[in-house]
Image 1 (cartoon, rainbow, N blue to C red):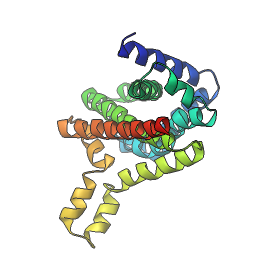
Image 2 (cartoon, helix red, strand yellow):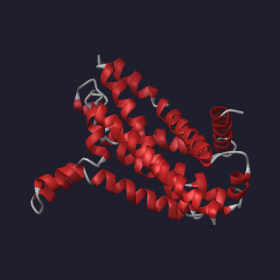
Image 3 (cartoon, helix red, strand yellow):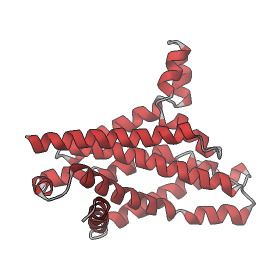
Image 4 (cartoon, rainbow, N blue to C red):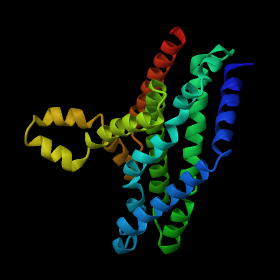
Length: 247
């Protein structure tokens, strides 16, 4: 069996595992309800008087801050808790195949949740004539953002068998990646630190790179940032898991 066939089999197993319990359905309902609440109520969708989904995408970094770690905290923690990690590592499956397979399954689940927000897109097109190119770009950026958060959650999940600890640590890391480029924070830091230093720190923020997607711009540098963040987190996950195998 080739590598991608193994990855596909692992992904299929993991994705099916999400829907064998009501947790997945509860997650989807909560995500859709919160998305609608922040878009139409907190985001003042109707008060804006413009045909766009600015109020929709603006809140995604904050929504994902808690929802994505909640979806990813069980990836490896659960395997360690019930003792199946050792069994998985003794099978004819390489570490990277297991990591990529489990990551892709969870990412597909999150992309499904994102796709189910299509009524928001239908609503804005019914009310006006939005630039759908910008909306599509926003969805691409949101998918990459969710993948980055998920990769971090995958990394923290591999570090501990306690799902709560995994959740808290991943939330803290993702929060730092938000605040590092959050305008109120950077404006405050500029008063106390060198602007070049602040700008350098902000370049590592997901907010800095996600904003371009919200404007309808797909910059290669922003794509590279998210892909690199995902790659680094998954590479670290592999290092941690290999440590368990060696131990």
